[in-house]
Length: 522
Image (cartoon, rainbow, N blue to C red; front, side):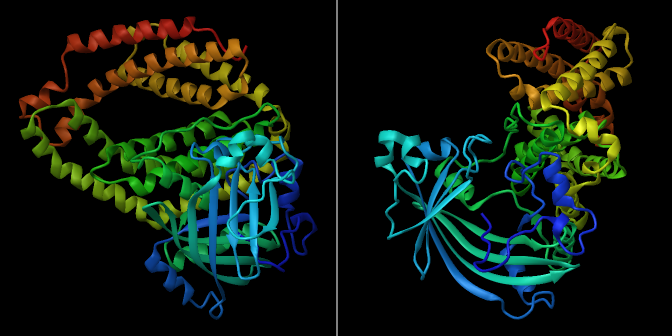
């Protein structure tokens, strides 16, 4: 959570702010997009940076003086089974010279379940106050007596207030660590809070700061950092179900879906390395899902920025593609000699991937995507107003019908198709699968959930077979590019005509099963 400095003005509606040209916050509210539901925000930005870069930033001319400094300590409480966070709540006691403050947050609770997102009250020491002024006791029942400290935060904050492009923005540079038992994780981040003015200034300032010290979009709050220390070490992050609810509009569901894809990418990005191929794979999955979301919601995104962001995301995914292809090739062969021959190419591919991820172009893409989701021009286009305000469930049903028809039509006479046509079918089947995964939470009735599981299983079978066929078709080109055509082990990876025919038949059977699977949204 980014603290708003005591005594500082809170964010004003941009429509009422002097000098506001577009009324961005008013547009957000008019389109039913409350910031608490969104993964990205028009009012706050969290940015990660390396510890060594923090002093470069603090000494820059952009930040006047030393700023106001303060130490910050907080203790988080939960049961041993983490029942509180499982219910979507956190409980922390923040320690300060002026007194200790208990903060209960409902950021992860179902939207609309509670009127307040946060409860604050003074306490004495490290003993939570469990009365009826917060939902904690009612949520936990007898388990409330098991609450105890689970992790602690200790940081140093430096704060500045900046006038930037007609806006007033609070900047907090925070460094320290989160500790849970004998495990700890460093924290070094910048929080930007729009106190007054139009939201574009927030993103403009972030880009200017990135010119001084490399910054990356932050997606982890302090509570999540702590809870991650309580679980196993993760070497990659798969896509999590998107938190869609039946009262959302199409516009709100797009922001939630695309924001989840952005988050998945950022969680995997720091884990990417030569010894961790799964993080590369999941980062590419996140970018593919993001591009699929842009395609699914294309009727609503009638602006030039959507196309540009799609192409930039394609570029970044492409920079990871060679490393992933070589990892897949490596897993398909057992010969150590071939592994040794592949290793120099793999090292070089990972070097190029890591250089791309470290580039300003990649960092800017993440900021551009966050800005687009929060305040992009698609929110104000009159031509998209009707679709934006559609119920998410109605939009989802129409989109799923559209993509299903396409995959059904493209797969007719699959055995007679060219390799290029089968490749297009594979890509469209993947988009449909992502769309089905995105929208499945909107169709939560028992019978629909069973249908969704069967539909997704049929799609997964089709996608797996089409993927295996694509690997076989593209293997000769990859082997030739790597200069391995003289290696019998490598040549065997290209398969035979009989192997290809068997995969084509299996893919055709999977397509027939997909066509027979009942639609869960109708």
